[in-house]
Image 1: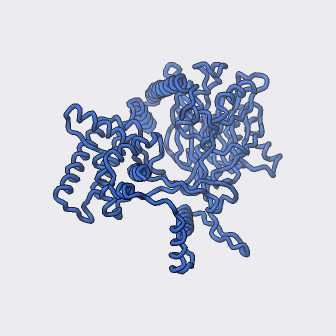
Image 2 (image 1 turned 90 degrees about the vertical axis):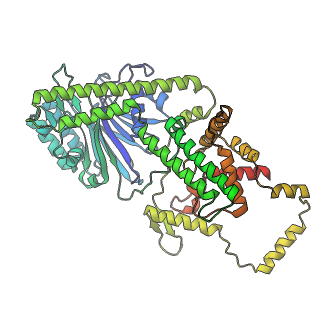
Image 3 (image 1 turned 60 degrees about the vertical axis):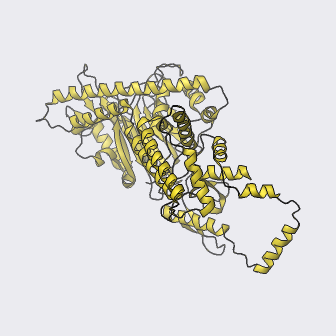
Length: 599
């Protein structure tokens, strides 16, 4: 998929308690929402923001978020638009903000995923039709008066304006003045309603009255997109959130023509899966089968190129890896499944015609589901927040991985947007932007610098080697030579695994050191209880000894690595300015660590 930024708009219906640490303050919920949903830019309506409140939020979330706002100087407890940027997802060092209407509209200019300019307009429209029309005319005039200013690529927020009857339940048309003003603004700025363009006949709403209030619904929150950018948008969504509000959130993912294509990354074995009973049973079953096959090879000596310890080990790893992926997809928390079920129910109600469900019945049914969804999301948010608070109380003041992570200044992941093809100083620089071809350029570069292209004659090379060896005074003893000749033992493997630190990045198979350590601990427990036991270290030892005797079998991927180029300095388009980090499979690293310790 293409590199992208997720933009969202949500009316949070006020700041909540003014004490940012109070449970009823909404900004913990805002940060949690942006973190969990991977939102890069959130347009917040009814932010009720002033400099003092912004300072409190900055002191608490400044490492993670950047907040820009426009407030009503006469009444900080009313109106207010904020645009919040997630430092984990977007570059925030070069942000420019301009206020258009105090407390109602502002625009920020930032960088898109490809480094090009991106302008986002955030709004919170007045309720009164006449004021709404004047507000929209003011925004238009702002751009008319500044012909050289970049027009918004995206404009989002609570518009308090519904141009089409389909976007209200029950359906009705709005006052002509604000509708015409919005249509005029969109036409002048070249904007379209991206969600409606994507779903021309669907009914979905962002503002909802409760069942007690009558259950009326409307889609007053929306994100508008410049027509030329629409093809670079995807995953338009409306969803219920766990923040106390009567609005739902609208969101979209945006990209550009020049944005690089990025993969899904390598799969990593989740820590919670280690305790899964069904997965543990599968590993034991496949492990015992592997153990029996390896013992059979030892006794019968029937080793073949396509049937040996290494190929059996590869089959075993693939089997448990596939099962782990399957279990990870199944093991969804109960509350997440309940939320998904209610979302499906909401969609089903929305799609019912008047003949299938009368309007009054539809209003109440929709309102009831929204209330259930909101309660479920709040429950999930509160549980997640409580868990975070408990961990912070236990580890927040201790120097640890957790402490380092929460105190680290966030920044978005580096992307390679282009790589230089030609470095000929006499000619113009040529660049590659296709991700696959960029990967090939990086591969070719590193293969070339590691190859021996010297033209030194063989005789000269051998003479130089001989000279170096003659000046080497220390020699290994016979005892040391015999030790080096000896194959690895079970103690060597156990010691190497024990000295392998947890929380390290795995290789392409996704299996962490913690998985191997857990399987070893289970083997020890099973032996004590006289239960069927899979000796993971014994299996690894047989594989390692097989490699020592026969060399690595091609096609097993045992030594295959995943190269991660880390930018150092100078031109980002030159692959030479990146330091390669190779992520190797943990079973390979245990093998090499055992050999290193032995040396």
